[in-house]
Structure formats: structure tokens, C-alpha cells
Amino acid sequence: MKTTLAIPVQKTTHSKLAETDFSNLVFGKTISDHMFVADYKNGEWTDLRIEPYGALDLHPANAALHYGQSIFEGMKAYKNEKGEILIFRADANAQRMNESAVRMCMPEIPEEIFMEGLLQLVDLDRNWVPSGKGASLYIRPYMFATDNYIGVKPSDTYKFIIFTCPVGAYYSKPVSVKVETEFTRATEGGTGGAKTAGNYAASLFPALQAQRAGYDQLLWTDGKSHSKIEESGTMNVMFDINGTLVTAPTNTGTILKGITRDSVIRLAKDWGKPLEERFLTVSELQEALENGTLREAFGTGTAATIAHISKINVNGKDYALPEKKSDSFSYKVLHELDGIKYGDIVDTRSWISKI
Ligand SMILES: *Cc1c(COP(=O)(O)O)cnc(C)c1O
Image 1 (cartoon, rainbow, N blue to C red):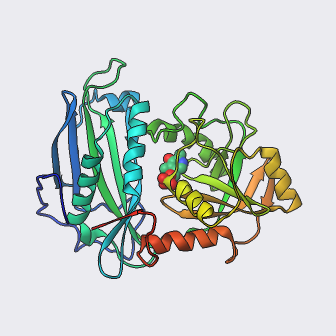
Image 2 (spheres, protein in one colour):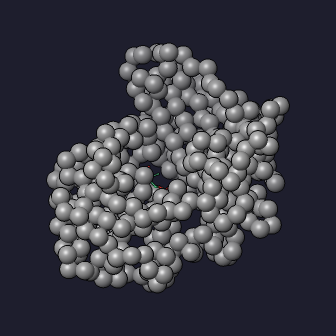
Image 3 (cartoon, rainbow, N blue to C red):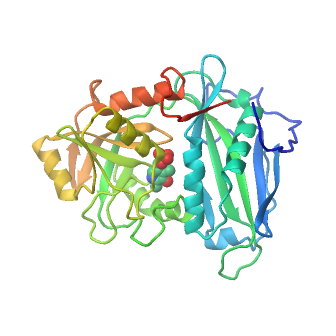
């Protein structure tokens, strides 16, 4: 691999590789041997290093713990049949991380540090990338405030870390969702468009209520009128209504700009699939469910790629959706994206970095 940044590496003396059961991976529980770390102080990123994955020293007055200056990313690497590692659209994650940083008053990370840290870390831990269709290495870059000061202000110091988790084949079972019209995930002017910790903390309580009522996830609506569908909280959502793909726009600042969403839109455009980036109203959704024009609904996100929605609760009423069909748009998209990620379909859009 060609590198442009010299990053010192301290290798682990206690690799957990041999004792890891790759046939029994629970998402997010198994963590690879090393992590990439960089510190921000005196206005610059310094001390770039790769070291054994391990506990951090944290001061009780750590600003991130009190006021939530904390942002993250999520992406995946895949192994092809030649043993090469393919990372999907990492540059888009680097860019989005910086957009989140600006909103949360945190320093941006030069794309070179993000990419080189990532590529050199994954190269070092390349034996942690599982092989086999569906398996992947989940990559978690994140940044948080490290000032030891409990006054409310942007921290002067930060840590940027990347660690990785091997994950097994993700058999995405169909999800049931409830349209949420009481609680709010994001409002215009808020932080919904940033991948920042607090958004997820705020969504736990309403999501738990929905789970207790028997739904897997929520479909969030706009915070002002609760009449427009926004997204699902870890996934963007798309609807095929009479052959036209409808998905919420991301220019309101209330919806996370999913890279899977963007990839699906790109494929839809390349294939000439009619597409509308606009808000679907709750009543429009209910009407399409009642008159049978809703052909399919699915979530898009890094973890599941495409998650088929099998049931939607609207205004207290459950609607069953048609079964997943092999001639559906989402099926075709999933096949195409998987093909590109595992190197079986030629990457004509420069979406893959190879190690
Ligand atoms: C990460 C995330 C998504 C999905 O984004 P991808 O880049 O496709 O993984 C959607 N919504 C929210 C709120 C998210 O945090």
C-alpha cells in the first residue's frame, strides 16, 4: 500500500485474533487489535499513532461527558476473493464527519489524516476483515472533546479515534415501523443533520416505547407539524409509490445525509428510475397503503444496506406491506451495491478504495 503519512505503530503483544470465533460475531462486540488515535491541541492535529486497542484515561470533568461534543461515523470494509480489502465511499464519510464537526463547534480533520489513519489501520488489522458474502469489518471513526473543564464552551482539545469490529453476515430481516407523531428527533435549526451523540440519546426513549408496542423502529416525522416523514434514526427511508421512488430531501438540516441513501439515488438516476426528493406526508403514505400504490418501503444505511419494511403503523393503524420481491427496485439495488462492495461488479463510480 502506498502511504503519504508516516504514522508510528505500536503493535499489540496480545493479539486476540486466534481466540476470536468468526462464525459467532455479535455486531459491535468484537473489536480488532489496534486503533488509530490523533490528538487536537494548540489548534492542530498531532501525535498521530496506531496503538493496541485499549482503555482511555478519562478525567471526571471531561467536557464531552457533560455537554456532548461528540461525533462519529460508520462505514464498512469488505474482503474480495483475492484477499484484497475494499472500503466503500470512505471519502464521503470523511467529508460528512467534517460537516458534523462544524455544526458541533469541533475542529475539522484533514481528509489525509482521516484516510491515511483509516487505510493504515485496516491494513495492519487486515486479518480481522472477515471473508465471505455478507461479512465485513465495521469501522467506527469518532471524535470527542477532551478539555477537563465544566464551563459550557467549545473544548480546546479533542481526540479522534478509529477502531474496527468484524461483523458477520447481516441477514436483514424485514422491519416493522411506527410513524412517530408525538416525540421529535430533530427540528429545523437543530442538530439532526449532524452525526452527533445527543441525537441518539434523545431517540432512545421514544424508540423503546415503540419496541414495547411491538415495532422494531420509528419513522420520525418533522418536529413542527408531525405531518411529513423524515427518516428512521439510523436509516434513511425510501418509498416506491407506483414506480416512483420518493425520499425526503436533506436540505432542512433535520435528516442525516446517508451515504447509502446517496448511493441508492445515484443508482436510481443511472438506471432511469423516476425519483422525487421531497417530503412524503403521513396522509399520503396512509393513502398509498390503503389504495395499494405503495409497492415497497425500505430503509437505507451502512449496517443493513437495504432493510425491507414489512409493516407500518400510521395513526394507530397497522398496514402490512407486500412481500419482498426479486423484481423490486430495492432487490436490484442491494444486489448492485453488494456486487460493487465485494468486487464482483466493476466500480465505475470511484466508490472503492482498495488495500
Ligand atoms: C448514519 C445514519 C444514517 C445512515 O447513513 P449511512 O451513511 O447510509 O450509513 C441515517 N440516519 C441517521 C440518523 C444516521 O445516523
